[in-house]
Each structure stands twice: as C-alpha cells, then as structure tokens.
Length: 362
Image (tube, rainbow, N blue to C red; front, side, top):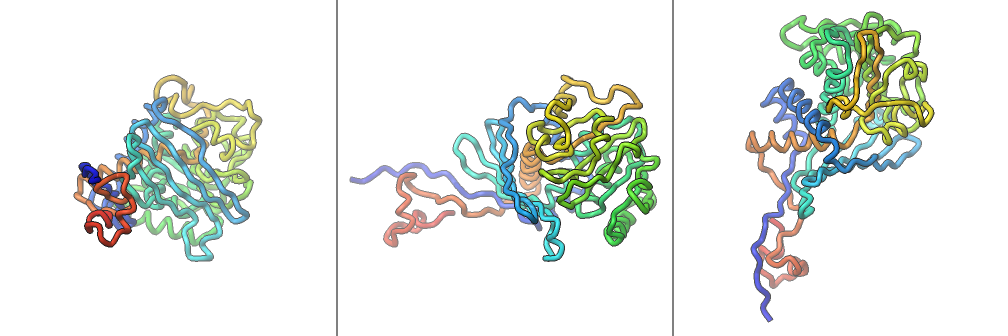
C-alpha cells in the first residue's frame, strides 16, 4: 500500500560559529551590540512571569563545573552548555566555554545552534549594566574592577559606554592580566575617554569607587571585598561567585547592603548569598525593573547585585544574535534533524533504494 507523501518542512538549523559572532560584532559595532543585548535582556526580565524558570543543572568536580541552563517562554526554548574550570589556562583553554540552542516549543525543532563563549561575556556585561542602571547611584563615574581576566574588558567597556563610567581602577593578583586589560582599554577611541588606574590591592582599587565589579575565577570561598571597604552609596556588581563553594564578598558586606539577585533559588545555592541563612532577605531584579519592588532607597544605600548568570540572559542573547544574523544575511545551516518525505519513515534514510532526498537531511 502506498503511503501519501506529506508536505515536508525544512529542518535545517541556523548555525552561528565563533567567527560569525565576531563578524556580527565587527559589522554592527561593539557598543551597539552591548546596547542591543542590554535592551533585549531588560525586555525579557520585564516579562519574567511568562518564563518557565528553573535553576541550572550542574555537574561538579574537583577542578570545575559543567552546567546546563534551560528556560522557555512558552514559544521558544533555549539551553546553554557551559563550563567553569579555573585551571584551564595551563591547558591553553578558556576558563569558560559555552554553546547554546534555541528551539520552537510548538514542534521542538531546533532553530539556532550558536557559540556562546564570546556571547556570554557580552551578555554578562550587558546584564551587569541593566542591574546597575536600576541599583547604582545616579551619576556614578568611577568603577573598581577586581579580577582582570577574560570578562574584564567587556565589563569596563559596557559600563563606560552604556552607564557613563569614565574611570576604572584595576587590580588582579596576576599583574600580566592587569597589563592585558589596560592595554586593550588604551586602544579605545576617543583616546583618553576612559581613564585607567592600576592599583596594588583590592583595598586600593575600591577607594573612591562608585561601583565595584568583582570578576575573580578561583573556585574557592574567597574574601575579595570586606565590610570595612564599603563606602556610603557604593554599588557592588559581584560576578565571580557563581557556584557552590565559590564566593567573593565577606558576609558582612551582604549584611550591610540591600541585595538583589536574578533567580533566588539558584543564587542561594551558587552566589555569595550561599554564605547567608535561608531567611536572609533578597529581591529579584525583575521585580525592581517591573516596579514591584524598590531598588536603591537613598543615595547612601549600599547595593549588591549577586550575579551568578541566569538562563533568561542566554535566551535573550540567542534571540538577539539570531535577529542580527537575519539582518546581516548570515544563512549558514547545519543538518541536525533528518528531513523526511514521510515523518514516520525514518528508516528510508538508510535504504539505498530510496530517493536521495529521503536518505539525506537538507
């Protein structure tokens, strides 16, 4: 009996490589990309109730962590694969490596497979700016950056161009990392638009800072900033503490501040918040952005954004990069899903007598 041939749907998946993402940033410009990502992330935070949010799934080892970060808004689903291995430098590998996928919920069809190592650095900086816009003291101009590794340039430039930071005070226990960061920042135009000051300690770096960004990588319960280093009105952008057993802020810092998080269940496990009792009060950022909760109450408040990275930000980033690819005509695809004349006849792919289009995905 002959089966009817059903109309086929193209099943090819858009693919964005590292080179593609580099090309998008170069063609659109770094600042427009950071601004576009910040806008996309804030829009998605403002529609938080539409998302099926859950903490990431983590597999820990003595040397690092590998995680999956899923989320869906009912129309699209995304996940990110990401690792964190502080010792990877000795293997000539990045500490963080990532890729991600965006799919349609109605069919499960994967629409986009993309690199997310570079994109994660961009979206993390953009998220930090979104939080600082809502929480930092208006008119903030000086930022301390403690930890001058792979994400530091992105943070400095995002805060400079999107928030008006005009001076960055840099410190890292690795002087070569600070030299690397300062050298990259010196190339920014116009010359001298961002003042760079090298500091000899974390305590030195935070002196006079309106915002303190911590970006350390060691998987350890470290104390980078202590309560005696706080100044009235300071905002702390704590990015490096992002898994169990990895912190940057002393408990006294959190006790002295109003603390804000992305997704409370995840941050209580992974952020600096892991040091605090279960009833320690925090506010999710989306509630501030939607006007459901207060952020900074006065110019003298100390605020902390305990940022561990959340799947919604990757959802926003994948969607943004897909739109950029459409705009720039990047159409490369991968054959991940078989394209069949009949959806129940998968075996035809292996049948040498079947028409070629049945045996090969597009």
